[in-house]
Image 1 (cartoon, rainbow, N blue to C red):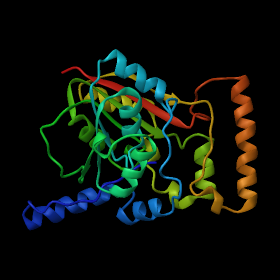
Image 2 (image 1 turned 180 degrees about the vertical axis):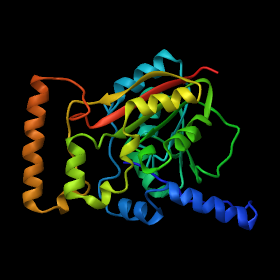
Image 3 (image 1 turned 135 degrees about the vertical axis):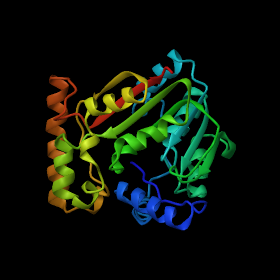
Length: 274
């Protein structure tokens, strides 16, 4: 999953506002209707977040090594990682998103034995929201690839970082076989992603340019395939996908390695050192 931002800047003079609006809209690959339709199509949003949730090892290690106490998840509605960090790592967590449907969040918290007050929710536009509050951990999972200007969206993450804080980013790798599946069988979803940013060297360079110390920037995961709303795809597409999924899983079980061509994700971990 991932997220984009609508633009709202009423405090700007009219001419500056429209310049700001055009610039930001050119940076977006999705819009509000996309995410409204996306979440309305989901029927299994409120799920139990297990201790071995995706990226759990990386998050647990960085929280323990860096003595992290506070975290903010950007663009993460309904807040799966905010819930994970609260439920399993006992952090003080915040979720910031411009698309919020509180009943969905409340139900997610309930099924995970959490209270409604356990996750602070901020319904704001990342491009206009301002705060002096800083966090030990700033993360987003499936956000930055929905923007054309990768450096700009990462800069907005860094603005929330406490001194010596940690930045953790994950995004899909559409240069891998999974990307071919998206392009072939779900062109609309594929078009909402910026493939240029799916490059660990580029992401490392951007973070270093901002004065961050990069701990890791790499392809992640042995192999996986997915399609949005797979149950609505033609039977032969679903059969082909499952067949390829099985072959890929067996192959990477025998030959386990991360790679540009098979790994489904990229991850970036960086620290603010100045």
